[in-house]
Image 1 (cartoon, rainbow over the protein chains, first blue to last red):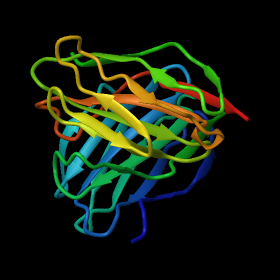
Image 2 (cartoon, rainbow over the protein chains, first blue to last red):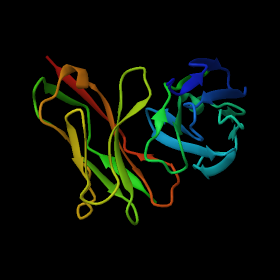
Image 3 (cartoon, rainbow over the protein chains, first blue to last red):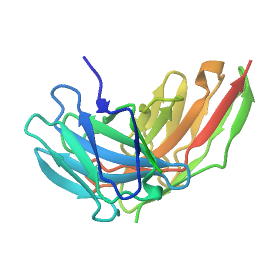
Length: 113
Length: 113
């Protein structure tokens, strides 16, 4: 069974631009969560989607948004990029809401210049 | 709110040495506890979990016991290998947090031959 796929793997953007990251969960998984990983702040929860509905949201500004499609694929969008948004963005999928098993993708490395 | 504190790193050991990485948490009620491992350039992999007090999670020679009285979930391995070199994250999922994970800072482990 294929794992969690994230595209693109690497991205370089300029401050002020916007970016969209994509996550394809494991086949059959319906829950997708997003995390931001930085050297200074560590791993921080962004949001969680299940059945196309946002179920949980972390403490990030409104510039960070996401959505989930009917096939469970998810996208996150960051508008008006800031230098501090440079990070590894990780997506995790699980079969159901509140599952003990979360499977992480390899991440998208975003660099904002 | 929920929080996780891991021992300061990095940790450097010789092959076959005993490993302990300390983890303590703050949470209301009975959270679920996890250890994740991240190899260079990869996403996180679930190493082991414990979902109730006194549970012992184990996998690949690693063990951790959920201690409610000391709010701890220390990771141990009796004999480490070079291939265990990675970053280890302690995490918790609160009772009302959906799938949201709160992570510790991570501990870099390097095992020398």
